[in-house]
Length: 132
Image (cartoon, rainbow, N blue to C red):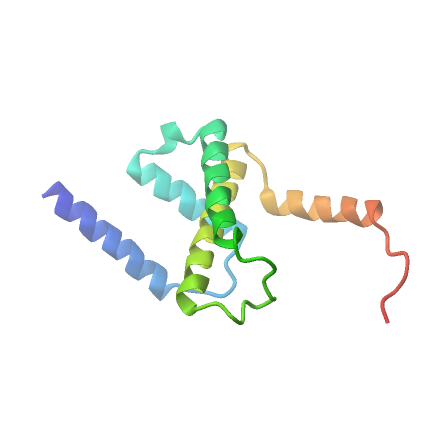
């Protein structure tokens, strides 16, 4: 009975995601959904910063494997099949989700940290010549 209930819950989550699909998902929405996802599964005890970082590194490795033997790849991936692009999207998503979860567990606002880093980079790498 519990197995059926969990399966139904998972199917319900998938349907809810499809029904609330938006092109403008915020980092805060992802953070909250990830926290809830971990909480209802009892995974919070395993989501230490170290464990999340190691999982993130593993996912970056999986992402790297996709490009490993392809050489240079054109922007927009015009020569890639739809299944290859889907696989890439899944691996990029895994990296993003672990990164967002890690920031949350560390108590950091990832969006604000990224904006601060952009400002620092603008000072570090000033525009020396305007493009034509």
